[in-house]
Image (cartoon, rainbow, N blue to C red; front, side):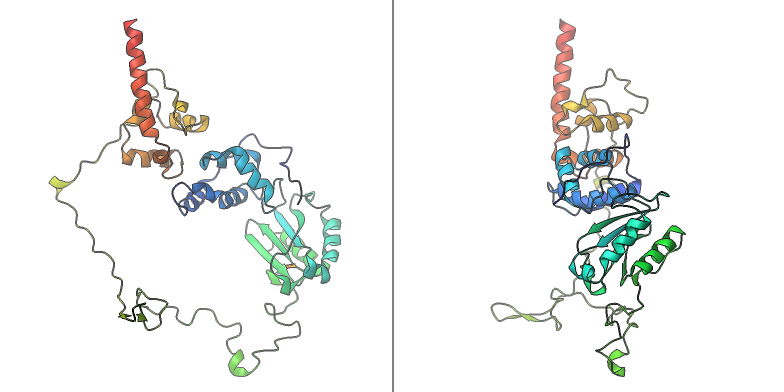
Length: 356
Ligand code: FES
């Protein structure tokens, strides 16, 4: 357990790229309604990648707003898991495994080289290209000692290392080359260093290293209700046999006749010329709308409770896309219902004012 704190120097603000937002929304949709906050772990990871390998403090606030979570909840998760970097890292970020198998196989030598070449843990080399951290087992113990190197190309394992071979890998990366990941001693995957001891007969070994695709790849397999049953027939608890049913896609529903079609509601939700209908309402009075959402809504031409109170389903969907809100959040927080009540109260208040 270690105390992990945010970096002292932080940027003023943080914005996610469109691709990162899309990926986070994809994760949010994987969780049941009301459980969207469960997407925080992948969302932090995506934000970290988007920020160049670390999590600036404004990114935590942004994710809190996106997932409708208190900042402290986001902070707790980000500071608990060591997979999140709270300080900037080098272009090539080395995580060195120092757990027992890697230690027995010489991780201390690698650490000495990293200290000499880069500096102490968490420091960044003078050219900004390298930084390193000792971590616990990365699950590649059979190829100890090993490191994971993360950069714009992804996260790659370099295994069976010596101080010399790791230094050569780092030199290649700094020079802009991409050294081949995997074993650096030349052995095939994790087979014994002296060569294979099993599957050595010609027949057994002929597929070694050659199996590029699954044997049934490309074959059309009928999808049955009992896909796990090879014959597609399985006895029920009553002893009766179920015959397999091939699942057929539902027939497409024909378009209803034009006369029967519901008129498409044209959302009257955007004021393209600004708040031309009087002083904007304080949208923060709607539970679930904070200062950021109010700013976003205003920037998209939404200023009044009556606008929001008039939204139909299509409008809600459109606004969610416009302001990058979690799908379903506006409905869950009942913005439309709240806005109707607030609009009514505002109208009543203004009439009373006129009478007075
Ligand atoms: S002990 Fe190093 S990868 Fe498992």
